[in-house]
Every structure is written in C-alpha cells, then in structure tokens.
Length: 436
Image 1 (cartoon, rainbow, N blue to C red):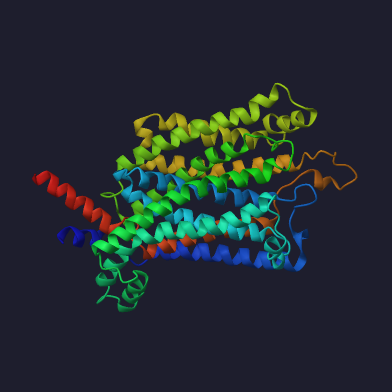
Image 2: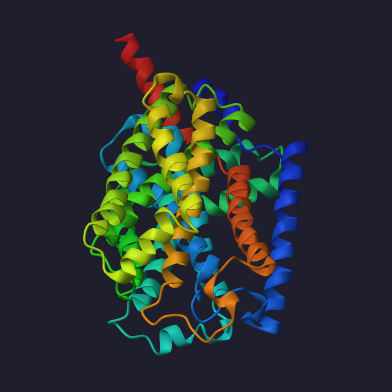
C-alpha cells in the first residue's frame, strides 16, 4: 500500500503549471489560425494553395505520410515489447501509445484536409474500388485508430480505478469521470485474466495492421508508376522510415514529460540508452534502404530517372536532400554510437533533429517526383514548374501538427503517463525477491 501511495504522489495527474498554460495557449492559437485558413481555402478553392496539375499533393500528403509513419511507434514497436514481456518497457509504453493515437487520428484528419471538396468524403465509401490502394487506406486508417485506442485504454483500467479513489475527496467531479471510464474495475482475478487476454489479442492484431498501414501507404505511391516511386522497395522503405520517425518522436516526448513531471526515478538513463541503440539501428536500416532507393538506380537510369536523381543529388533539392540524409540519419548514428550520446539531453536534441528530418524526408519523397511527370511540362505558367507551399498550406499544416501535440498534451495531463498499478506490482515483486 505504501508503494502505491508513493507512486500516486509521483504519477497522479496534476494541473498545468504556468508554462503548461502558455504551451496550450500557443497550440490553440496555431490551431485557430489553421482553421481560419482552411475555411478560406474551402470558400476560395485550391487556388489559395500552390498545388497545381503537377504538384497536386504537395505538403498535405507529406504531412499525412509523416503522421502515418509516427504512429508506427505504438502500433508495432510497443506491441512487440508487450508480447515479448520486456519489463524495461513499462515507463515507455503509455507515452508511445498516446503518440500513436494522436498521430493516427491526425493522419485521418489530414487526408480529409487535402480534399478540395470534403463534402465528397462519402464518395470514398460509396464508390470504393477494392483494387485501389486508396480504398485499402480508407479501411485501414479507421481500423488502426480503433485498435490503437483499445491498446491504450485496456491497460489503463486499473489506473483509472486507482485515480477514482485518489481524487474522490480532492476533485469529486474528476473522480466520477475516472470512475465511468474505469468500467467498474475492482481488480478481481477474473477481470485481470480478461484484461490480460484482451491486451494480448489487441497487441497481436496491431502488429500486422501496423505493417499493413505502412505498406498500403507505400503502395499508394508505387502503384502510380511514377519516376521516383516506381519501386518494389517502397513498402520496406516506408516501414524502415516509420521506425525512425516513431522512435525519435517517442524520445522527444519522453524527455519533455520526464522533465516537466519530474519522473527521473521512473524514466531513467537506462531507458534512453535502450532507445538510443534502437534509434541507431533504425537509422542504419533506413540508410540501407535509401542506398537501394537512390544509389542503385544511378547505374542504369532511364532519362526520366536521371533527371529526378540529378534534381535530388546535385540540383534544386540537393541541399534539402543531403541535409535530411546526413543531418537526420548519418550524424545521429555517429553520435548514438557513443554512450555519452545516449544520455537524456543529447538524446532529446538528436530525437528532435531526426523528427524534423523525418518530416522533410516525406516532403522530398513527394514533391520532386510530382514535378517530373512522364509528359514534359510545357505550355503552362512558369510557376507550375516549381512548388513551395503557400501561407494557407503552412498554416493548415502547422495547425495539424499543433493539434497532434495538443492531443498528446491533454492525454498526458489527465492520464498517468507511467502505469501506476503495473509499476507497483513490479516494485512489490522486486521487494519480495530481495527478501527471499
């Protein structure tokens, strides 16, 4: 009982401090600005964007792919850790699942924002064609949202019941909400057995679904038969990139939560060391797929591929390409090879750099390819030969990123980010082992 009391003092949700209020206010302002820009875009049409007949996807789809990639951290990585019973995962899993849920929700919203006529969203269901990867995407994203929610919710039940009792006298209204969501959890043997079985089933289900989500996302590109996307490498390439994006996002959020909530005794340097090794491995694997994607075609390129590769390696997108490759993959690996580079503060900056690099990586996967169609661009305004997002596009994109961060912030505010009951059980077990 004393162990649980201490954990509650450390892990129970707290009010936002002044910095937290400022943070939420900033995110809200960005979201409002994005909503205004989107309403204006609906009224005036896509003309307010810089998307044209060639760059018809632009930054919105880059952002969508980024959200899908980031969701991979909870949908597969955490599920595998759960199924393999790695006990060191305990302080990490809930934060990873929160990131996954926020990311996949925003992926669904972002793909809707890309539609010039959101009122036609229903047509994706009415006129769906099973041979189209877009139809598979329409099915897999809601499925992933539902299962990601369950993977976060089911392990929460014991903690919600604990928080119901904890806030009973302090905050009765909040206590009632925790009570409703705890589904009358009493911690009986039958409830524990059902919960354990449910979590295992969900964890097993989400692994293939997470892999399918990334693969279908890749097939949306590779089945278009465009230069730069016409590759059987795309599925594995996207999965490798998703691990990089997801783990780096987890590191960044983990560090911020650890610092603001003072959870150094629970989220330790050991956990950052483990994640640092995982991120280094993920970056190396992703670099391998980048070599397959860009170096191999340079030996026998078609005329179109040669133009595309020249644009990336030495042309107008070369600075961004090499910045993302070297700064977002190569240098992080070098730093992470050293133990000092896997300490919390260096890991935070590395994770931040890799997350930003991952976002821009999606941008250069999409934009240069769209500007190199099979038919030459001719007889159109000069602006159609180039693409850079308009103010409307940036505002809407920043709003979706802010909304993802706001979802994470709110969930971190009201949920125990480190599992209370499981941590108590582990500490009790360790205490008994030491006695014996």
